[in-house]
Length: 246
Image (cartoon, rainbow, N blue to C red; front, side, top):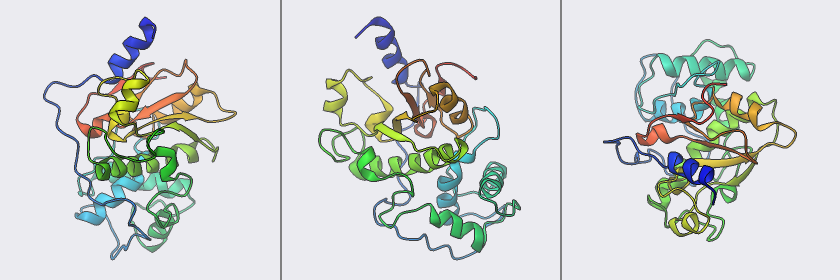
């Protein structure tokens, strides 16, 4: 591994002093069907259904490049409201910020019966050696949940790229697999909340630029053969966009 690659790996794994532990999942992935929305959600709503809403609209965090993320806290505040309105506008719904039957139906249309999302599946995100979510830095259930949350951000990225198919080259990695390929010792791949992407026919720089609006707090340089995205801030890490704001 050359020096630049080693430096990049080091930066990708860097921690913030005092950073918190991985967030516990609020909904275990792999058991979902259509989410059972039981009410219209509006500004000021709180609860587990708001948390699920935030997970599903997290990729609509900003309208332009911004180190902004939707807080996954079960509290329907201004950030959630803005993300909901962007989601609604993107899918041809009335952008009123109210999450009623039409918006809920569209949200559910992006979910597959096994809990993965419409354009992504679990196999794309499992460890390439074991084919599981085992032996990372969190439990398999937490890694799978983190991957599910990442999928929804990738659905938003895909939509913003004009519905261009996205290939996931690497998702979750076991500690041993990550070590074998020279990954950072605290790579976000070890938690299931990172992906290395290829979008055929689209320059990595373009992918990077659109990812800047999707709440991704980790973006590796676009000057490589893939585009790395991750959600490190969800785990208490500092934001890291290697090329800065583009």
